[in-house]
Image 1 (tube, rainbow, N blue to C red):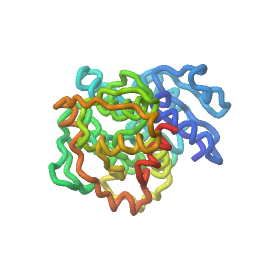
Image 2 (cartoon, rainbow, N blue to C red; image 1 turned 90 degrees about the vertical axis):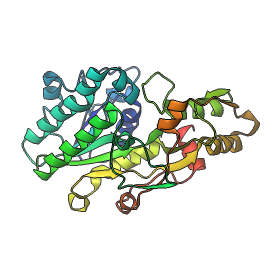
Image 3 (cartoon, one colour; image 1 turned 90 degrees about the horizontal axis):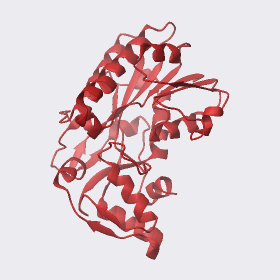
Image 4 (tube, rainbow, N blue to C red; image 1 turned 135 degrees about the horizontal axis):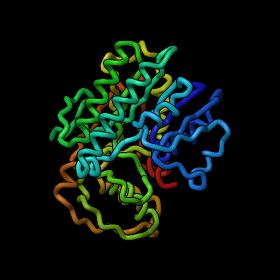
Length: 314
């Protein structure tokens, strides 16, 4: 890809992706879109190949500026996270559905070959996960929150526009990505990152789920690997639904705590478990994920907790 557009470029995943894209051979231009882009906080903005577009990506003026030159590849990461989208339903609708649909449509109207669009969807599309010990990647979707519903609708629209030839899209359903910087981001899974940061720093942590709470984990580096891989898969290998459930490392919080203790020894922090029923219901009852179709396409998880921790909290 010579010309790439990244929405949400200033976010946690966006920054990691942009830095990796700038290392790719042949890249001529990277258009970075986000509501705010600070060159002091984001040194890569000073790269001559980067064109920063600060503003709401759904605003016509922002889209026009971002798409001044048709991109070869698009990574759509911008969103209003789950709990914030639920608390601000109008905002969630505007960003996660309407703005995304506007972006898809504008891309489909561009001249030239259709761009490969990699969409950061979410496991929130499933809603309540099955109580069985394991889950297959073909699990039916039944979102319980607006965030998941909007992500699912965006997946369907992207697949339809791909069928019609306007874009060449692929939606990736992301699990919890760690370790996000401590901040009130609105991600319900933020406790996963907070746990890693605090214990690895030797600090105590009050955990909102119990030690048996089981979740899907993926490091930022692994997530970026999968995003870049998605951009390179030939269209002929993709199913008509144009959706991939990424493989994820399944582990309980207790197993993660033990792995941190083994890595840091006596320097590791201690955990005080104070489970919150709602947090456990949404983020602590994950079955073991089986994703052979995604793995056959070349997508991967971190491989083990030791590798996850090395990448997530180096």
